[in-house]
Each structure stands twice: as structure tokens, then as C-alpha cells.
Length: 174
Image (cartoon, rainbow, N blue to C red; front, side, top):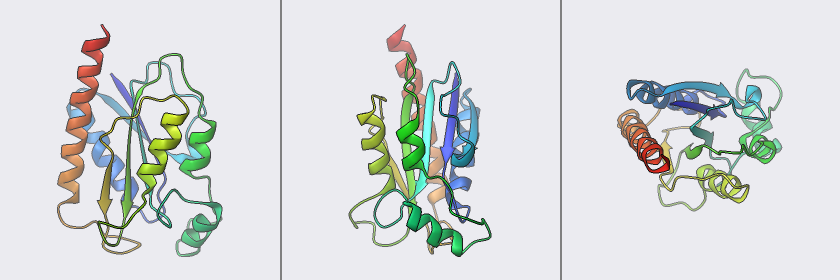
């Protein structure tokens, strides 16, 4: 089995979580690679069975060119980059779409409305991708991190759950 993790990250927390998810998937026997959204393919590699998309929450949703510019102004990344919103809007739907799982990072009140993961779920499912209802939000303490205590362990548990969902999907499709 194989997975591709596409991640949008400005300060490193979202990317760090994607690496943890990929490592946990690998421990479950799933070959997983992490790709920055700027380098993500417009078509998924043949045989991709799981697509994980991770993005930071900007203004209660996916980033926009303006919010990306504001984030890059606070980092050394240079000019604003492509975001998950634009990439997912152009992603080709394969004949056999992979299971999709989404996560986001955010700071602030856990009950605040809106999230990048929710918007990514709607966008991808609207394009025909089978999106798992197991989306998750990971919390950061400040814009530039670090992650709140316990979030790394939550990421490992979430990834193990994704591996189990993927295995179940594989069994039921045979």
C-alpha cells in the first residue's frame, strides 16, 4: 500500500505532523511520502491508495493568497506560495481515487468555527474524492508553534486509525 501526504506549512508545525503521520503509516506497512504543496503533482502516482492533506488554518479556513503573503512576511520562505486550495482544485481525479484524509493546524479556542480541514474535505469530496470523516485539528501554542502538549501522540493515533481504515477499505474492495 502507498500514501502521499501533501502539506502546506509556513512555520514547520504542519509539516512536522505530516512527517509523524508518514512514519506511523510506514510502521503499519504503508509506504508514505511527504510532499510540499508547491511540489505536489497535479496527478497522483499510480497505485496511491491514501492521500493525506494537511494545511494550517488561516482566517477560519484554507489559506488565500493574501493570508499566505502575511504568513510568508513572518518567515524566510520568500514570496507567497501555492496553497492546498489551489492545488486541490486542479488535482486530477484518478479512475480509482484513493481514500482521502485531511488535517489542519490552528491556534486559538478549540470551539472556534471554521477550519482548513473542513474546507479541504468539502473541496475534495465535491470533486469526487472519497474523503474519510476522520478529519482532525492539531493545536499549536502560537503562530510559529510549538505544538501543544499531546499533539504528537494524537497524530500517531490518528495515523494508526487511518492505516486501519485503509486496510478495511482494501479488504472490502477485493
